[in-house]
Image (cartoon, rainbow, N blue to C red; front, top):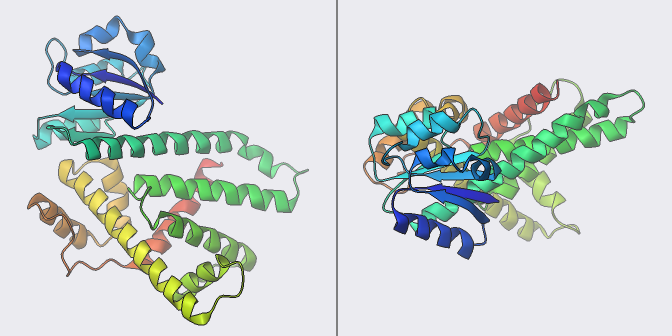
Length: 311
């Protein structure tokens, strides 16, 4: 992955470079101390996949720089600044910033955010490649089996894309949710008619059985089902945290606007936003996520993304 860093503080540029290189996240293709200098080095910037940029800089600030380069720069943008004003942060998101990190820089946070952005880039690239060739899936000479397998592959890529939007990529329950999506796709394909969504316990039972190479011991199976349920629940709480944090930063954030009211009861989201604002790291015990609702919405949203983009 290729990075470009724009920050008027040399120490910050050095720290970011060190983090990226130490974690082997990619290569720095250029850096600048203010946005105006990008005009002289635009060829290097266009090579970059990710732009790390400060908000307050002399000559040309971060938002003005983004506005200036956006028509020609197709990479992802991460803004890193000491400014915490909700209006300015919201303005940054409205101009296409993927994440906003507040200074002083926290190494763990920066690395975590960069890894998420990299995962999103890879997912989007893969999905675009699949969508380019999806028309071949429906050509007359393609067998029904090939159609089903190609569509299943596209469905799973769409699921990965959605989970990245929900902030779940990298969580322990990420693979469990993918396994659940795979089971639901196969189950609905078998039944063909209007799909009667399975009970939650039946979903976990079927997925845990499928992941065992030999017939499982009933006690082991029960333990695995319980562990899977806990992993999924923790992943859903992470999604609630992610969406609530986006909404707290910018209520008009498109990811927050689209997904928060679909996946969660909005009173719960507002409550979690208030907790985050007050500095509470984890959701309070009286915030209960609806696992079945989350999985249902995830399945139908994945269906929508799959078939909408294959048209």
